[in-house]
Image (cartoon, rainbow, N blue to C red; front, side, top):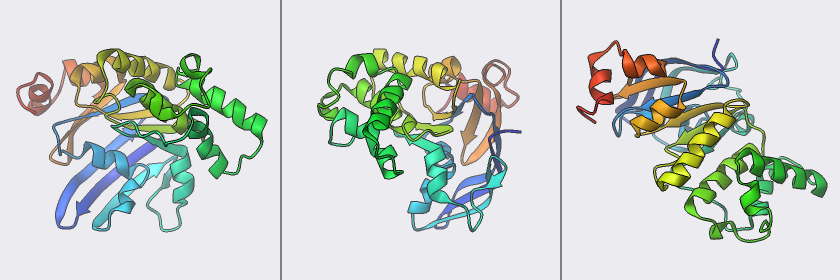
Length: 250
């Protein structure tokens, strides 16, 4: 059984249905890529997994999203606890305008960690987890805004790791980066999945093929098909999947 399971999930923005009867089973300690053309529901689905869509007034959701067997849309579900366990990295790096150290320590401090020695350890461990420590260890007190775009994105990943999540949601985390920074983030995914479950939205077919264990193809708010990446890419069951992956549309 997967760590995250969506069952008959429908989502509406006002009268517009953005997700239609989505069913998917996300395996633990894997990278799952969500692919499909713009506006097909990938990012909307990603945001249902940590209830980010709650922040939009007109959203209505039915169906279930189970996290470790419990429906996160249940009336008494602990949303703050959920967002600690299910971290999110956005398309554009969004470091806080403070030091590199304070960016990482921010989350643990909010969750009650006050001990300086423990914070030092969390900062080092998180930066190492995002393969950034060696590049920034001598400038922890300097502003995070002085980092390159690729470093800022890895800093945002480190900041997410600092609160010890179990799942990482990544919404096109490399779309604004150069090829070298993109490669570093892709290599990082391979390391991260040993400890975390990663769900990534990507427009880049080559990237999805390189980094993911599983792929789900979204079209017009529905999952056309999902499964092991090599099967989706090389033996798709649906003609629409084949057409999208080979670049005939999208």
